[in-house]
Image (cartoon, rainbow, N blue to C red):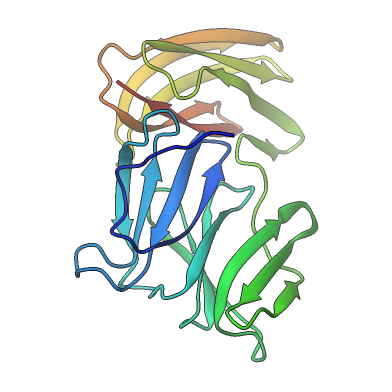
Length: 235
């Protein structure tokens, strides 16, 4: 058992969840604080408690009592006691979809997901627990299959990283591979590998010398298929 003191929150953090792909925590703050702090989601460094990024969801969603959960797609799912939908956002704060709730499900304050079964368990402020079926919370984000071809980012270690990290890539067929790192704005900041890779598992190393602290998207792509995974640089 341990305690992580974070740099985020104005006494109104109402929920949060661990993000296994990014190895970070996401916390959500309600609509009570000042305008610039209300309905705010923050990504938290699990080692230092520092805030890596924040984004507001006020334009789409208002959080009173509420909660946040991470789906297997890597997206964030947010519930609120004053909304009639579950909001889905990317980890960078892009609105994906508003999932309408059944008419008899309301005043939600908690959420848990079972993405393998496409199910959501939600709880209301009255203590009622609802089991929602056919809830699309995504597939694992590190593997994408297209026309029976597969590329996989098997491991990224360490993640978060300070100086460098190793990436293990597996391919089922030989192909030209481009392995890159992009920032949260989609700007490519590093080319780790650009060449032909055989149908094997291979380990690549990336250096953090020229990287600022933050979240980055690791992308492995060929002409036919792509795999992505988020990594976190800490300084």
